Length: 269
Image 1 (cartoon, rainbow, N blue to C red):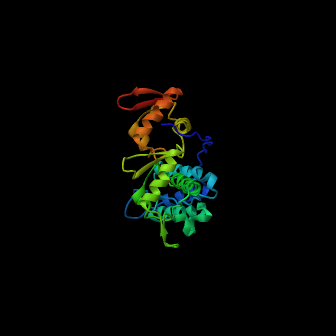
Image 2: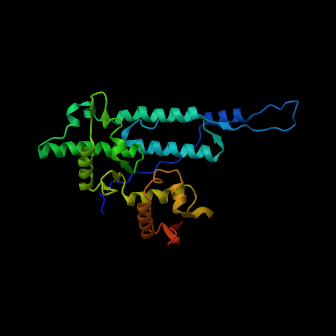
Image 3: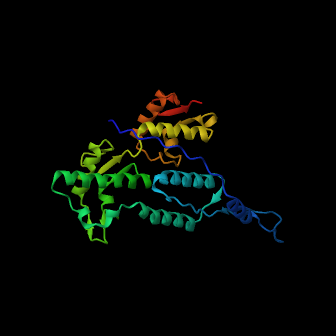
């Protein structure tokens, strides 16, 4: 299956923890000795995660990537993230997602399938462009038609309009025809979206291995499960496509097989 090539984006660099976070962690870890015990215990350190993910739609993916790296850093450094912080982070994403909504999203006629072919193509194009952006921001590689059609904006309570299954399948067929996705099942319920090409993902994963030191360290060997548990934007890519990405990486000289049958790779530095 061929996929339209997109211009690769430059990979953002990891951001170091701010001084304010370090100071907060330091304050939380200082425990005054008591008269009853001579030993000191360290309570879990806390850090507030306040990250603006979507200041500009064109840099949304980079913002999300940096946020995920930040959270991963906190976890690796034994910093406890409170439920309130995670709630605020999710609320921030939901609030800022509204900023990428197209102007026509609350127009009632956009929830009615046009009869004429020219208008139908334009309608499908508008919706497909939004769905691709929607999936990219939510880091969704596969969307479930039945699940999505109950959510905003596909179910728009403000206009009392919604897209039904047939309409979403019509838009999905258009996406497939444009080589931006494929149906993941025969019933056309799950749609695999390629908001990045597999070739781009191959470059991104290898760049990650370089920046994290894996490519030149003892952790250069990774199983496909390790890849899925890496908490990166590519970790939820379907396993079938991950295998295809590995093949591309092998062709580019990024990896060699440690055990091909078991899908175990070794990065080449």
